[in-house]
Image 1: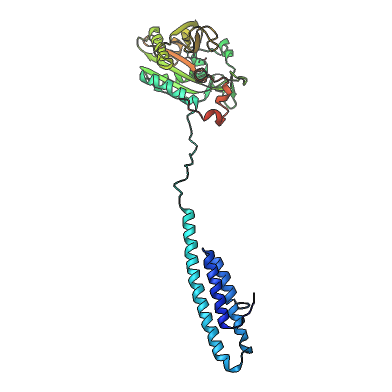
Image 2: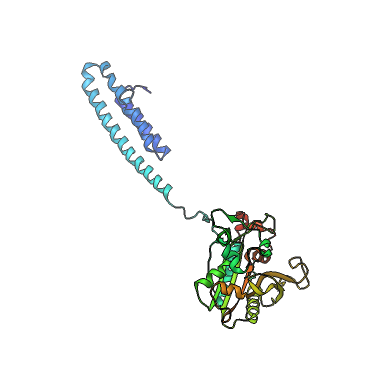
Length: 355
Ligand code: DAH
């Protein structure tokens, strides 16, 4: 780079040309100015330094004028490059600021929005109907004792009805009625509620339940139930029927009818299977197995032994209870073919509005 000039005039001409050229390229940044500074003012090979080195070749009588000329040139170079540097620094700062700015013309990036799980939607809808009928929501533990899950509900220790639910027992509990297990239904919350408050009682108990079931499209070791319990003086089977009928119409639509058929559950007497008329067809379809009816819950009048176990006088009070599968109702409503979809957390399934 030490195309060492010549004379101060030549150097000045070169400087003008180079700066004009740089200005022509436009938008000098600090690094460009730095390069120019090294080229012109660098201590080793800078143009001005090289020019000064010529001093010894200059005839004696011209030395003073030459030296003064080089000094004047040096000051001019410094001044011009300093000015350029200030411009370049301001330009760089402005660019950095612009890069930070929000470009309001860009299309918005829509953040992923969470949605309610279909089971939550169905649970809330059921709760909504019963809230309207004056029910409260009650809660109970998922790890239960044999007493609450079975015995207090009239399942004697060797009662065959226990075999209808394969039970997970939990290590660390006692024996007999103190044995610990994962609750197989939400019915134990009936007993806990009755112990905790006196009639009139009107509660709804949603929750997770566990059975040692295989996993297939219709079974899962974990699923969800919704229990209902009403206890008061003068409660009759007619209240049960009227309540289930009101629920069916409100939940499934005004045309839904209720059909009750006798069956056995140890904690109610009489016990019934409750079906609603198929709301998906007129003449029979696959959902109702061409019967026109869909079974949605078990129900019945609370057994006097159960009331007595909770310290409620069965001579004075009566009640009814019901229990339904939330998962099954969600599957019915939305035509969900496989129970496992509800638990696998696949966002392609969850990212829908299950209104
Ligand atoms: N607990 C029963 C089950 O899991 C469902 C049930 C039936 C609940 C009758 C009730 C009832 O409250 O009265 O299969």
